[in-house]
Image (cartoon, rainbow, N blue to C red; front, side, top):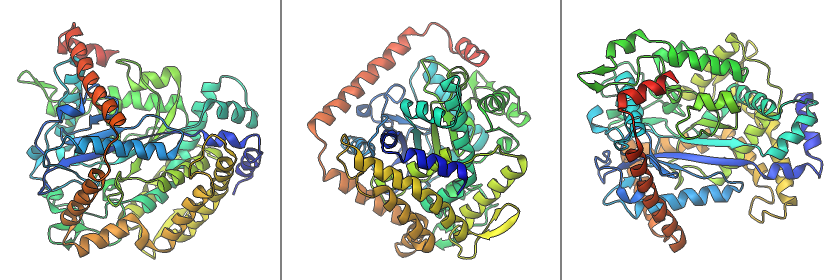
Length: 531
């Protein structure tokens, strides 16, 4: 444990500073496929009762028309995040006819690209652009890769924390520049230690054979009938089979500061890619992609964590970052846990909070090209063989056992978890179960997983797939189990009315956008790209 980290802990542990730790701001984005009773992807349109996927703030679609995405508001209380997600599930299931929500990150049984309908967003220019962007993803990577789901965890600290922390660090000047600098400190440490999250929360050690039907270049072994996997894998979603891009693999996006990050991303958005030029942009009067650059837009960049800033109407994410700095970070490395009704639980959230605070408060040197290679290597080792008892990781030029490094990292995290518990025990505004020792218990539970890999989600899912006839069979069982769970708990009239009104309002907003368009799509797209 570094001297700087200990100093930060000591000062935050002062009774007058502890309340700063009770107002962590968190939001969750959770994706999940709509599937039939036979575990095939739903071919129906996004249910009208759920609202407009273009304008609804909480229920939308990701890549596919069948790939739902839930977005929570920003909450300070852990339980509020879980409860809101649960309400969205209940509301959705009340409007599905003969369909279920697939609980896993890896998709259901597929029948090729044509079985994966691309999301539609109406006839407005922004709606067409969202659809064409997804067409571009299909041409570049295939639709199969885009059928993978996951959970994104958005994390930030409140304004009063930053005022205090800037003084603690002995710095002055523009507070937003300081916040951006510190969030990049967090991001670098997150990348250094993300292998631990992959082990602890990876939940995709197996997949259905249909996912790799046209891919003979995998090293997966047969786990059961029509089920493939690796014996010690943790997250095939994060492997070369998942969100990977050859064109992006050569990008050297820097996380050392905001300016260099924006510069690298800007270059990728404007630099043509010969392979994508071969696809064509507008062919036979139909758009195949938004452009032929390495990235069509910023969101195409696949990264385990992103610096983010809330965008204004029609504003590009990169423009928002450049002009107003980092507002929060988006953790994108998390598999959906099919053993949990909403894919994540309170214990995982509390550990993520402690983990991210550790990444923020600990020393965070600039990343070098050599260290980036070590980071990538350690990630791949844990992705493909994280539960191997003899697994070794690289640290400072040496091979060290996974357990040694994992337990040492958890030992560094436990002090900040204890401070979080103390802070909530002192709080008079939060009477929830977050008081007591919930954060410390969350870290201790991860120690148990390190000591016994069978307790990890990937270990449990591997066992389920083996015992229940395969990946599809076990996940369909979980889908029906979760369906029964949510249906057994009636949605309150107040929440039902709120979500029904939100759906109605979203359709009105989409119509307003469509009638207000003044440019043809060609002109709109040209203006957007050249902005």
